[in-house]
Length: 100
Image (cartoon, rainbow, N blue to C red; front, side, top):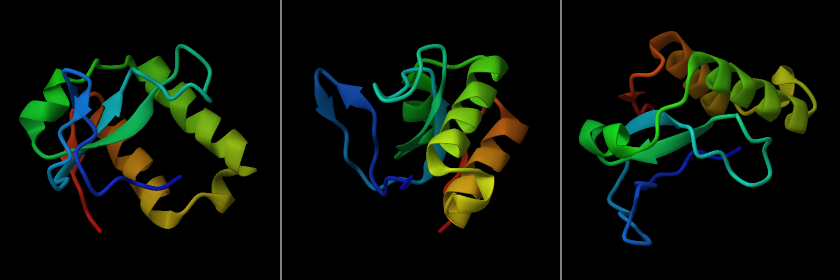
């Protein structure tokens, strides 16, 4: 799992693509994950993060479990991605600052 360095918000079918400054949980999970899950998305601002559909805590926890399962276990997830999930689950559903 790679964290995007640009805003993932789609506006009228186009990604914003400004440099990312915050991470947020998205209820719009990628097609490869089960429905009812959540994913991590990058945003240029807290305002753009607030426009993304917000997951429930259960969806967020399912998203983390999906990533861990797809990766072969939590120990195989990149440190920055694991840190992002941990911080986002703790703040759920609020966005958190992007750290690199």
